[in-house]
Length: 31
Image (cartoon, rainbow, N blue to C red; front, side):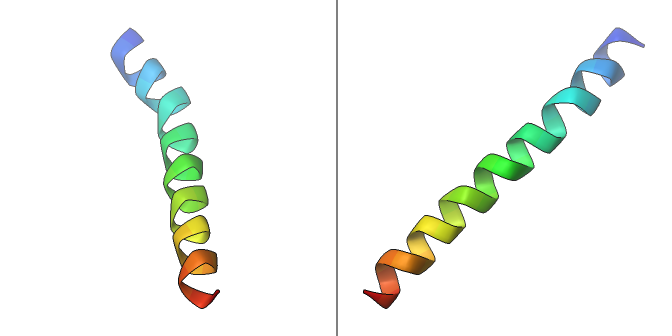
């Protein structure tokens, strides 16, 4: 259960980080 709890807490952070990285790449490609 602890592993699933850790994954549940880490998944949103990883998703947010990947979204920020994609957004930065998108902005730099537009400039």
